[in-house]
Amino acid sequence: MRIIKTKDYQELSKVAADIIAAQVRLKPTSVLGLATGSTPIGLYKELIRQCSEEKLDFSQVVSYNLDEYVGLSPDNDQSYRYFMDHNLFNHIDIERKNTHLLSGTAEDLEAEATAYDEAIAAVGGLDLQLLGMGNNGHIGFNEPADHFTDVTNVIDLAESTIEANSRFFSDKSQVPRRAITLGYRHIMQARLVLMVVSGEAKAETLAKVIKGEISPRVPASILRLHPNVIVVADEAALSQVGDL
Ligand code: F6R
Image 1: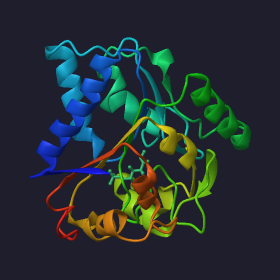
Image 2 (image 1 turned 135 degrees about the horizontal axis):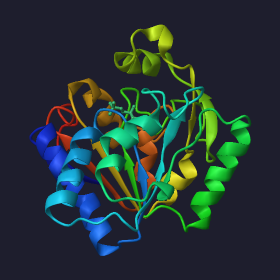
Image 3 (image 1 turned 30 degrees about the vertical axis):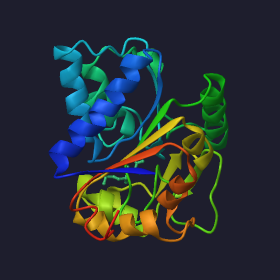
């Protein structure tokens, strides 16, 4: 696990965007695993800038997002499809047909999950998986649990995640209780994993991820078993890790 410490969120966004941009420039047909949430917004802005000013080209890139809320249709402004369209896809030259998100309104969510895993396998897996990290250490919506679930699956969101994500909704009762998330298999099989973590609220968990026990109780800790992980985190997020 390589850890890059940045002074603040702005620098984190630039460093992480440059890693993704390098991936796309070196392999224009890259398959990217993408994330939503607050943390990637800055790096998505930087990628948009590089597209318009520095000829970064997403025209052959294929993307698969990590997760989606169950019950929210793509036109719901809290859905992750809506988030991705507005924060990235609408502003770059990626082909819409190459952008994939799980459907939270699929009639058969289990079949949706299986088909998603199969589709990622069929394109040869993910070249780069971008991850944020929840306050409780979740990656995707893989919440703390007794075991690591390999396949894409439907999960009950942890109470702390519902609380944390209620900031995006008019009130907490509006936050969906379930989500569909990529399991650990495709995350761990990605050729490069890039995790971005910002802010003091995540410092205690990030210290456990980096130095504590590898356990499904701290989902992101599994990344220490991956051969090619870069964590880009700001000083605040790394404030409880001690010496690196
Ligand atoms: C989002 C996702 C989540 C977030 C995590 C951190 O697609 O999979 O794991 O990355 O909840 O969210 P923020 O960045 O809002 O703190």
